[in-house]
Length: 209
Image (cartoon, rainbow, N blue to C red; front, side, top):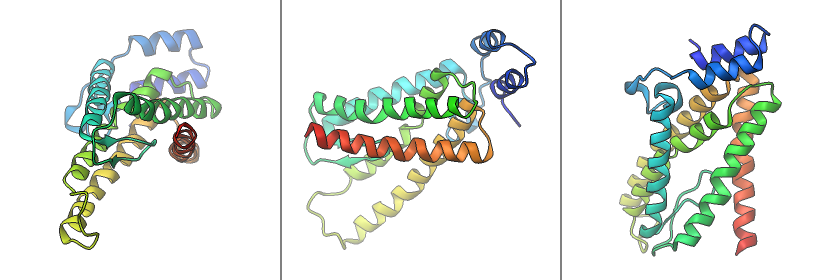
């Protein structure tokens, strides 16, 4: 079942309402809260203000995690440096990873005839990153000098896999809700939004040194 936002976008695409009318409806529309499903699709399950609150909390937690040595140095990467990361380094990590993902995801959606709002795409990208913070918590539990063949390391690595899988499900569903894209267009935009920012963030970090 499509969300109210998706129905408005479909009405606009079919010419039933004008762009101005659609924007007015979208700005006035509050998504119904279905908190039992927020962990699968924050943008679809929470109200706009609820998703924004989650996104703000995630951003603050991500910035705080730098003090523990956790680096989110890529569009979908989490690493533990073994020492505290400076705020400047952490901020650079965030700037080269999150905004490009938002802008590329938004540009892709618009190029594929979606009437997505930048705000909704931003909420889809940022609010789902709470799962990457959980991955960072798992990573903090791994001693820096542990033997790669240690069973504890293997258990922690296996424990991360469902969390990572849930992150990709979260992002996919929230991006679908935010853009109204379907089928091949949705999958194309989703994979490009994942891969291109990841490559760009790595190149940027290498260039910055």
